[in-house]
Length: 380
Picture 1 (cartoon, rainbow, N blue to C red):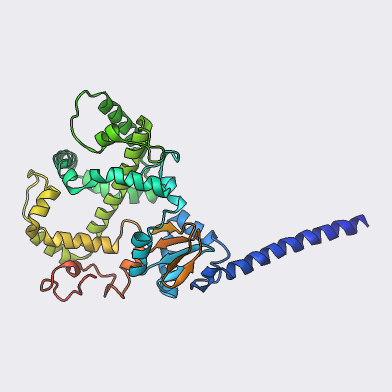
Picture 2 (cartoon, helix red, strand yellow):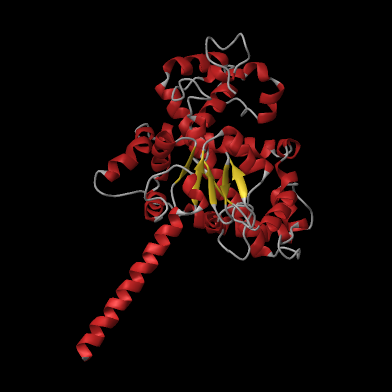
C-alpha cells in the first residue's frame, strides 16, 4: 500500500508538471505575438538567443530569420525584431520606447548609471537633456585644438616607434593572429587603467582654483546632478559618467574606422578615387579638424560619402533593443502586448535590397548629388 501511494504521488507530480508545460505551450502559441512570423520554437524558449548573445553571433541568427520570414520576425516568447524603415521611426522616434534591461550592464554602478546604461525613462531623459549641450557642434569646435594636439602626439609616437624599428610596423599587424596560432590571445587592462586616470583627472580638476578649459568634465563638476534624485553628483558619479562615455565612444569610433579601412582595402577603385579627391598633406602638416572639413566641404565630398556608405554597411550596432511599457503598441499592423522586447535591426535594414540596390556593394556614389553618382542609385 505504501509503495502504491509513492507511485501515485510521483505520477500525480509528473502529471502536474506535464499539465503546467502544456498550459505554458498553449499560452505561448495563443499569445498576440503568435501572428508574427518566426521559427516554430520561438514561443517556447530563449536559449538560442542567449547562446547568440554570449557568442557575439546573434546578428547571424537575426539575418537568417529576416531572410526567411520578412521585415518583422518573432524569435522568442516576448522577443521581436523589426527591419522596416517606417516601423523603426515608430519605435525610436514617434513612440520612443524605453531601453531594454541589457543596457544597464554597461554601467559600473547600477545605482548611478550613465547616459547609455540608464534604462529608466524619466532619469534618462533628464540626463540626456543635461549632457546634450556638451555634444553640440559649437561646443566640440571649442575643443578642436586639444583633439589636434593629442592626435599629433599620437602620430609622432607611431612614427618614431616605426622608424626606430622598421620591423615593428609588421609585428603590430600580425601579432594577434600569430599568438592565436598557439592558443593565446591579447588582453589589455586599459579600461581599468582609464578609469584610474579619469579618477586622477577629476580630483585634479576639483582642486583647481581656476577653470583651465570648458569641457564635458568641467560641466559635470560644476553642474552635474543625479538624474533620479536631482542632488549634486559626487566624485564617483562623475568618474562613472566619464568612464561610460569614453568606453562607449572609443570602441564604436575605432570599430567604425577599422571597417572603413577594410572596405578601402577591398575596393581599389574607391580607394584611388578617394585619395585623388583629398588635398595633399605631409606628415608634419597640421592635423585636419572637423571644423575645417565643414568649412571646405568641396575638398572632402568623397570622404564624406565613403563614411556614410561605411556606416550603412557597418552600423555602430547591429541592433538596438527597446521594450513596450504598460500599454499595447501597434507595429507594422501587429499588436504588441506590454513588456515585449522590440529590437530595431539596423544591419538588416541597411542591407535590404528593397531600399539599397546591390546592398552588399561598397558604393559611396549612392550619397553623392544627382549628376555625380556615376550610375549609382540615390540613397533613400
